[in-house]
Length: 252
Image (tube, rainbow, N blue to C red; front, side):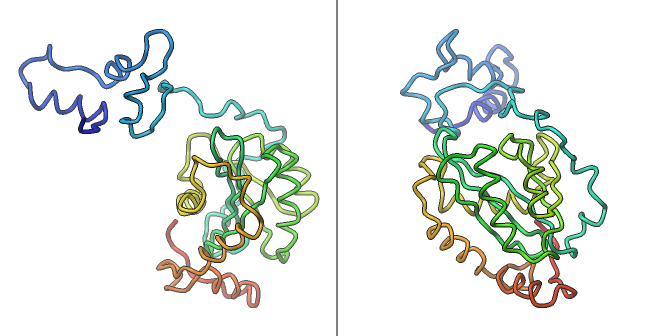
């Protein structure tokens, strides 16, 4: 097999048989032909050739989470002050979870928008709302007040205890709109980097706090073009010592 995607096969048929519409087929029809009728499961000898590697078909439009809009007292990102859109203002964080196999384990990720400085939340006992709250509060409390301006998160129920976090840390929390990953560019980029260390195919709860510290130290020690080839650690240290002179940051 050439491991072509259904979309590539569809397009190749159109190119190969431009005047024979009976030879054309949609990519959805190709998907449906691969899966067992009525069950939605891909035959074992074929699913490894799909880029997703999934043995179960996820239909278009099917939500990844059923938790959206189920968090009480959410404040959406659209209600955040315009100042927060400026990366020159330090203390604005983006957060999310990276999950392990079958989404049963997770690590929390926090990224400071101005410096790209990363902090990770150790979640050895799962990623329930209580577990995330209990990991988040002491982590945020390590920061000086001027670096606790706001946190934006997606609408997963793991942050259902957001009011407890705000009460304990005085950190304003906002929620992104569903299906709009561009609203959290820094965090999306960082999560991609973290997958080098924490792939989806493993149980993330096996990682110790010491291992998480090793990873953040390595990421925060990488020079970034957006920081004038300084490291996030150097830029963050500047914010700690001189908050009136934030480093220049331009792109996610």
